[in-house]
Length: 130
Image 1: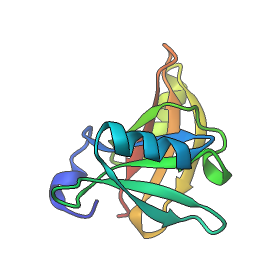
Image 2: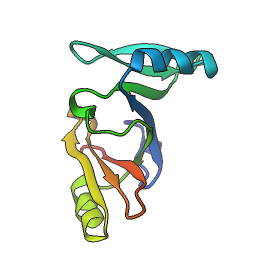
Image 3: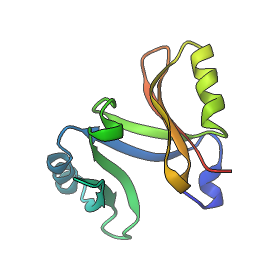
Image 4: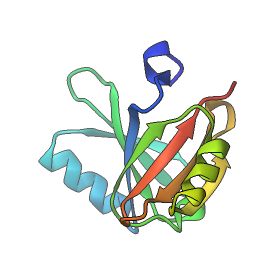
């Protein structure tokens, strides 16, 4: 997420799926789409980066609904780039939205939160560190 193209406000920068059994679901998408799962250690378990078999480029994530992901619904979640997650949280709340999770730090990568808009649609917001 460090390259300049990925910092454009409003673009979709990531997609992941959080489910109770990421082991089973990563195998499903591996067979159906052809993605190659790469384990990402979460300490006591692995989540998965799903990569392109041709390029090895990371396409999406498949995660367990544990730890910081325990509150997330079992659906594909898109992450939008915003200038500042904290400012976007304030605007979300002022405009009839809800905060489902976060804001949380992603270490050196930035900060994110998960919101629900007034219609009930869920999305994540992400901002890079300054």
